Length: 192
Length: 162
Image 1: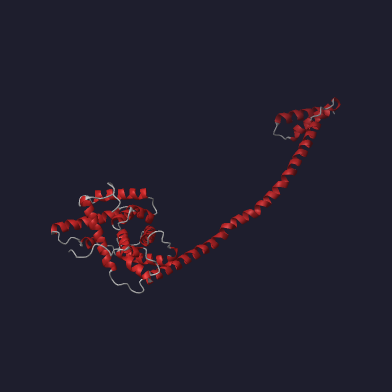
Image 2 (image 1 turned 120 degrees about the vertical axis):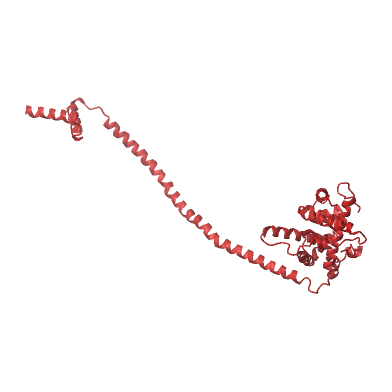
């Protein structure tokens, strides 16, 4: 059932967050888990997340000359990943006959992991159900709502950073976030 | 969290649910990316990029070939029409002027004939006119029994007088 695994990815210190793109291996090592997490949470598919993560870093490597440091490296990479996700969803709509989600993340797989191992069996079961319900509801959100929700509550970005990443203005971000939260609260409310 | 808002900041059990969700997603991501990266980790992405570029080139080449193949067919009716249209115009434009001239000349001639025909017959020629009328009536044939009967009677009387 529960596993004693850290719930956090290694924190980025200031020097790392403004890391120069010259040491690209280091950039990949530091940011790959975050990009993978965001893509996987957005698409719910491990293999696809790995593919898009690779594409994201290749794109970043090819366009490294265009990175001027106006935004943080994390924001820049997330923006590339977001564009790849949008492209993928657009292509998937065009190729609707293709079977999708061959390697979708198993809800049980996700909800099997409960951070608080000291919880009773009943509490752990409730937590599992709660996570499963939130995951399912997030998956049903519209593209923009899901993106904003994940950037806010999984990537823990500030509103201004979400606006910068998605290209929306702050009030639009706020509006999407409000709606997403309302939907998740309503649908997963029974469990949450 | 620096940003706080009543409507966009979950609280209580709902916040706990979202925290658990984040922890679960982070756990799966960490597990999936924990495996050591191969040196050619980006090789599949490069291969995909190249094949995508090839597909794009092929798609554009096909589109261009299709355009080149369809453009002559699309232009052909235009060229045929554009070739005949000036001829028609050329034929019609000069023809309209003589027609107008002809109609004017004809109108003049007809008017002249009308005037001549409608001239009053002099009294000295009145019997000739009557003869002419009779001839015209006989020429119409036996279909008009009244005219024919009168003409025959008149002819009979003239013969008898001789």
